[in-house]
Amino acid sequence: MGVKIVRKIDSIEERKRYNEHLLADIRALEQMCLQGLIEEDNIRIGAEQELCLVDRNWYPAPKAMELLQAANNERFTTEITRYNLEINLDPLLLGGDCFKTLFKQLRTDLHYLEELGREQDVKIVLTGILPTIEQQHLREEFMAPVERYYALNNLMRELRGREFDLHMKGIDEVTLKHDSVLFEGCNTSFQAHLQVGAKDFVNSYNWAQMIAGPVLSICTNSPLLLGKELWDETRIALFTQSIDTRASSFLLNEREARVSFGDSWALGNAADLFRQEVLRFRSLLTSDFELYSDDMLLEGQIPKLKALGLHNGTIYRWNRACYGVTDGKPHLRIENRYIPSGPTVLDQVANMAFWVGLMRGRPATYDDLHLKFDFKDVKNNFLLAARYGMSSRFYWGDKLVSADRLLKEVLLPIAWRGLLDSGVSADDANHYLKVIENRIDHQDASRWIRKSFRNLRTQMKKTDACRAITAAIYTYQRRGVPVSAWKILREDVDIKLESQKCVKQFMNRNVVTARIDDNAGFIDQLMEWRKIHHMPVIDNQGILKGILTSTDLDRHRESLKGVCVEEVMNPNVVTITPDQSVLEARELLSKMKIGSLPVVHENYLVGIITKNDV
Image 1 (spheres, helix red, strand yellow):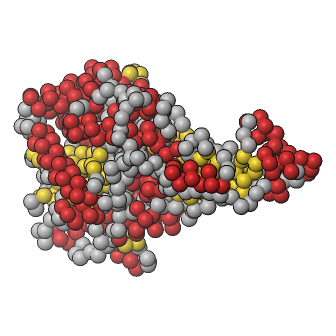
Image 2 (cartoon, rainbow, N blue to C red):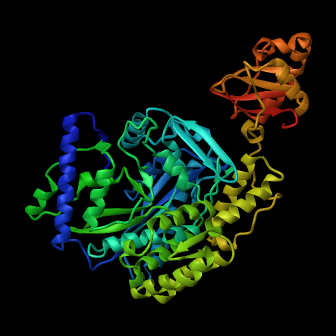
Image 3 (cartoon, rainbow, N blue to C red):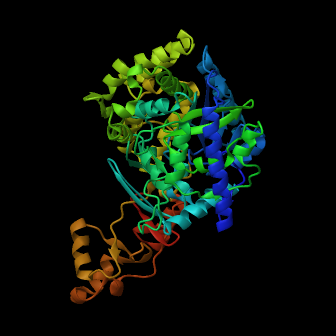
């Protein structure tokens, strides 16, 4: 958010004071735009690198605070979970070999963190969604111990008035309820910043919206979540749902998700764009403020617009307008938030160079987009790219064009001109745009992950397939090989799994269950059809209540039609947890002379493991 000490707005007086500062910030920004105080000449680029920490077995490693303490560097900072970190890269003037400099800076920082991680037995992985994240890693205990995260989490829960619902449908489907915003922590991105002058800000912002779908289509790398194949860039839907404050009761006046692409073109000037966000969304958090920004401006001081920055930090546009002050000069920039982290440093910097080139190379025909193009087509393009990646077909003007054709024939030439006209060296432009072109011609990260995952699933459980994917991503990242050249993984890949296997790696998650109030005769028939001899029994909340076996049914064979499952089941169930070892499961099955063990987490049934599985 840019403001570290924050708290929930708890009183009418506190809300009034915050709103006064917010309005003063808008007035000050408007005056700075009108007076020509916003920096126009120097164009800078910047980036924020979000990353994942994993342990030797490729699971999330909650070691962020230990690494931060060891690094003792302000450019490294927390993310919402204990297994994510962020690197704030130094701004660079656009031109020359700036992207090569950015690449070297980022590689140096990652190498430094990797060296620190060795002492903690931690590795660094760049990917949009870490494939090995499981539900257990989304509990509140994995939240980074930072006050603003707890404040945000508590406020979101209060505003919703109920649990967080997650429902996504791609090739597979995920439907979950969760008690915190930690699903946000699944998402890691490479956020690119481009400084834009006030005079051209609205035209530039609208152009950023126009190109978002095609740019995203060639950058996708997040098709997996919890072992399910979903969208090519699942982050887009996941982040939207994880930070949604809207409740179905319509108690709030917000009708638009805080994470969104937007619903219309930007009009007016930069201050109008910020003003619209204040109109659309309630203020959630506050901090301590000093002088009013418009008063500071009258006294010749450049204000930091702290209240506006705090408000802006709770609204997650995929293209977000930002204000800042560098060396005493105020500036505006556009933040690209939809590009995922990874799959390599080279791929990330190429994504950024492509986007910056497009932004700087905008042809005059794309000025005043609000008069020429339907915004709903542009928004639809973005959603299509998130779902289908390079398989998308986009509405571009009055034509429907395939992603590869639009990228190669229209956008790459614009990006090339934009980089050269901005003073970027031809070698730098060539090098990074060639990475994009090779990805179009060969494969992108989402396609590599999908094909590799399906190959691995012929011989592996989902958990091990996800770990193999993560291990391979790490290996290719260390080598610096762009994803267009990665070899598809085969089922015989060796990922050096740990010798001590866990139950969760081998259990069956698709469990056939009975309810306590089901008719016993009906369940008996289902078990015969499915050729199974035992069935866990749950209540309406999914809590394990017992187990029903063929032996139990045989004892009540004469009266099955008139009784419910609860009357014939065995309520004394031998269970095991997902994190216990397979060795423990094997010994328990042998000792108790049973064929299966229900797997429970906090009394909820999450799977079943049988003799055959171990």
